Structure formats: C-alpha cells, structure tokens
Image 1 (cartoon, one colour):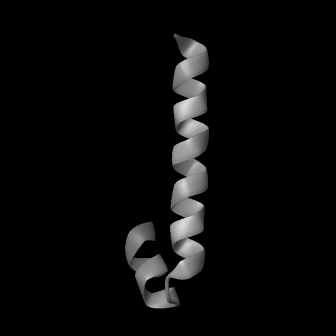
Image 2 (cartoon, rainbow, N blue to C red; image 1 turned 135 degrees about the horizontal axis):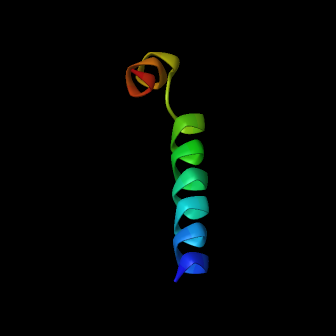
Length: 33
C-alpha cells in the first residue's frame, strides 16, 4: 500500500541520515555524488 511505501521511505531516510552522522566528511561527499 502507499502508506507502507511512505513508511519505508521515511525509515530509509532516517537510516541514511544516521549513517552519515557517524561517517567522516569525505565519505559524506562521496555519497552525495
């Protein structure tokens, strides 16, 4: 369903943001490319 997809997108976004916070800056710039 659409709700499930939105929840998945939100959790993925939160996961990636949490990972970025633990990473040094060079890795962050690599991911942005």
